[in-house]
Every structure is written in C-alpha cells, then in structure tokens.
Amino acid sequence: GAVVSQHPSWVICKSGTSVKIECRSLDFQATTMFWYRQFPKQSLMLMATSNEGSKATYEQGVEKDKFLINHASLTLSTLTVTSAHPEDSSFYICSARDYRRGRNTGELFFGEGSRLTVL
Amino acid sequence: AQSVTQLDSHVSVSEGTPVLLRCNYSSSYSPSLFWYVQHPNKGLQLLLKYTSAATLVKGINGFEAEFKKSETSFHLTKPSAHMSDAAEYFCVVSGGANAGGTSYGKLTFGQGTILTVHP
Image (cartoon, rainbow over all chains, first blue to last red; front, side):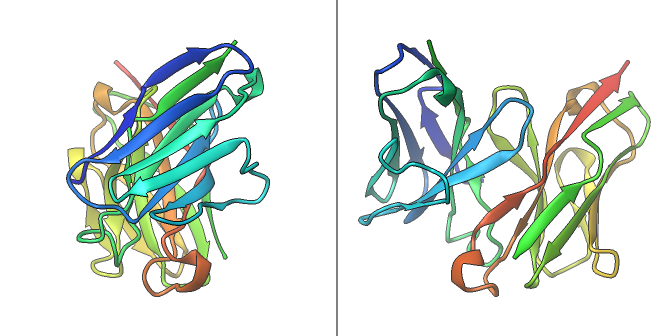
C-alpha cells in the first residue's frame, strides 16, 4: 500500500519551545493530508485538514495559531506546535489519501505517529 | 452526519479462540467502513474496508467483517486469535465519494477496542 512517513517518531522538549513534525507521502502525491491527535487510551481526533498550496482547515476547538500547518508541496505537510506546554503532550498522527487508490472509498494511509512530550 | 460506536472498550480472548469486535455506525450517506489496527506507539494499519461491494469483506491476517445494513453493523471477526493480534482496533466510517460537501473523506473513528490475547 501507499506509504506515509512521519518524523520525528518521538520528541521531548521544554515548555515554551516549538516543535515541528513532518509528514511525507513517499510513493504518491497528496493534495490533502490530515492531522490527528490521540490522547492516551482514546481515539483519534481530527485536528485539521492540510491542503497543498492553501490554508489548512481546522476543526472546531483547535487553535490554528497554536498548531501551525504548512503544506508546501504535494508530498510534505508539517505541523508545528508553537510554545508547547505539557498539555500539548500527545501522540500526533498524520494521514493522506492516495487518490489513485483511495478516492472512491475515503481510505487513508497513516503515518507511524509522533509522540510529543513537553516537560 | 456520521458516527461510530464500538460496543466494547476491551475484549479478552485465549489464543486459538474466535475474536469478535463489535461496531455499529450511522451515516447520512452510503458509507465506506474500515477497520484499522494500532499497535502501541505506532500508526494505524488498515485491516479491511467495505466500499459498497461484497458485504463480507476479507482482510489481512485472517480478519473479516460483514456489513449488515439492516443492523447498521460492521463487526470484525477472526476464527482463531494469535498472540500477535493483541492491539487496539478502530472501526471507522467515511462519507466516501457519494457524500459530497464536508463529509467526503472525513473519517470518524470509534473509541477503539483493546484486544488482549492470553496464552
């Protein structure tokens, strides 16, 4: 299947710093990528939809100035957690749709996730 | 609007015995349904998907699921559990290509079911 890669897989940072997480589609182009957040023992919550060449669409309750999303190319979207605080500690997962395979089904391909711990 | 309910937060089985993970959904459109598996600190891997074709869907690792429209269910089964099946499983609904508007492509996740397999 299609491959989506996330980096870093885990990161520890001090409170007040900013952290960037990258999401790459390795063998396909993705005009749209999705960013999810997963709290311990909970399901995934969609944070935002990242659109190549335009602004991201944020879900209700997600601070766009806190979670900056950039989708500069068809294979790369980045999520920057700005001025991170301990409550931002979570597992962040990105996904993308390979339109060659997933267009009519909505199937998404997921990255391995990035675990952020803010001290 | 769409929603997913996984009826069991935890399921425990013995190795070699059948597995049943229950999922009910609601959707305003003809849905696409998925089961994803997540191992600890990992991303999500697609097990199987239903996309309005055959109602009995076979997936990887011996899993299968049956779409029952009258019961709005999409339960996941496996005849014989293996230790490596221990993970968290998510039932997911997508509005699919027929949904249009903001439902298209958006995945709605169930709360997840943690499967434990005892020796």
